[in-house]
Length: 211
Image 1 (cartoon, rainbow, N blue to C red):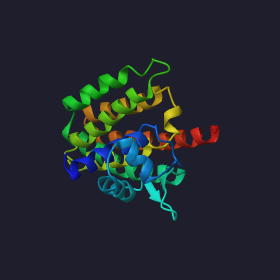
Image 2: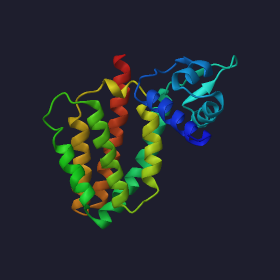
Image 3: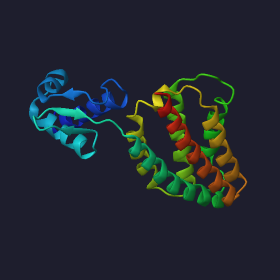
């Protein structure tokens, strides 16, 4: 295996462990233990760690140890505000084009959360991503899904969102956006998406207050 592919593999494994919560925020890591656990030399490991540092997933401390960064409340709220602006515009634009097969499939997926009670976080996280990607693609904004994926990757590192198990409210908000797009009602689609993010912000603050 080449040095580059070793580095890519190490990057994916470390990043996935952090995203999935197997490595908790504020965990101290060392190059030695990472190299031993991954079974690779320091050279490809350092290349992988450099990418994670640039992505602000980890930071190097003065003693050379690595700290898994905690996602701050300010980061979460900034991401919500940024996505509100981008996705409200996407919903408005999508309504001018109309419903797509991807949005129809996303709507069907959201329906099962309405009266389901407690549900698995991972399942909803995937369906949530499908919905937001479908809106972006329906709007013809081919670069937006990549931007959203980057922001969602940051949010996923937060332990707050993992404690939630009832997704009926989010599902209703998603369906309202899709229905407005299907009706080609641009103003309502934009308003429904804005409301979704306003409520997302309120839910985030509510989860924080429970800690």
